[in-house]
Amino acid sequence: MKFFGRPRQSRGYDAPPPSPESAISLGPGRSWHRLLNLKKNFFPWLSVLLLAVIIILPLTLFGWLIFSTNVFIVQAITVVDARDHTLEATKKIIEQHVSQSPLDKNIFFVQTDVIEGNIISSLPQVRTVHVIRKLPGTIKAIVQEKTPTLLLLSNGHYYFVDTVGIPYEEARLDTLPGIILPTVKNNDQGSTVTLGVPVVTPSFVKFVQLIQEELPQHAPAQVAEIRIPSLSAREVHFLLDNNWELRFDVTRAPESQLQTLRQLLANTVTPEEQQQLEYIDLRIQDRVYYKTREAAPTAGDSATR
Image (cartoon, rainbow, N blue to C red; front, side):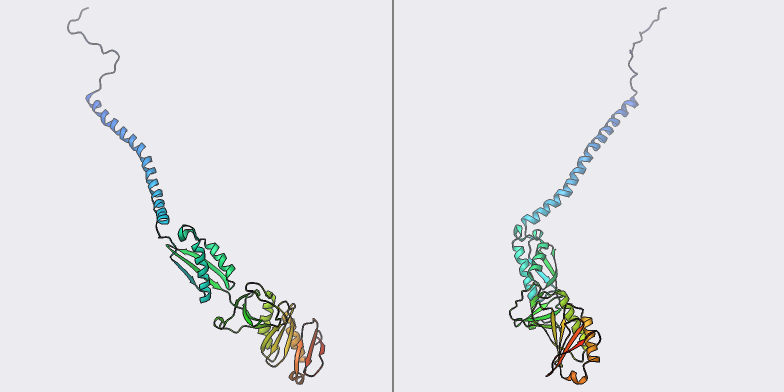
């Protein structure tokens, strides 16, 4: 059978040509995908860049301020809560340390813990010290000084002694505290006193304090003077304002010796003898000796009296 007309062209196996609508939609779709890929690749780098700026810029500025300017150079040193002579001595120690600091007295290179150790070791009167940096250029020291427990008189010099028996400062009229301190006189002229080095034991200090406070309740007099034969002696002598001398053993409890004294005065020594009493010796355990003027020493058994 024959057909007449134009022959039909074969398109092979190709897909049908896209319609005008679908051809138009391909352009914007490809552009959107490219933009999306660009954002995915750009944002991580942008985050890294911002992070680098946030970290590096302040560090650079800080380094410039430290190494290239005088902003953090120590300009002032302040010391608080200290007496004038302690203040000046503390300031001098800090200035000496700061002058040796790297980078021309840069405050960040000042070692506050080293300064504190130097102050404590150099100034025995200082109990605690806290050194801090106050930006941009101030070093501040907060000092707490020791409180004297007793006065020691040795070779014509008075010393403040702390609670552990360390003489930490030579006492002067302008440095005396506003309270009355027990004053212990050392009769040994050959002994030497070194500031910062213990001269008596902490138990000795407590012994003297307790006797000073409690003695008026056991004897009809007040303490006028306290003496020791030497700095290493195991005894202490209390001179009263009625001319009595009481001798104590500092290695035994002061309470028991005061109790013995009370019993002796109440039961053994008569009022007439007390008028002439020269000394009472409590240094021997379970025994007590007393002597009146122009009389031989009398022994008493402290366990029964």
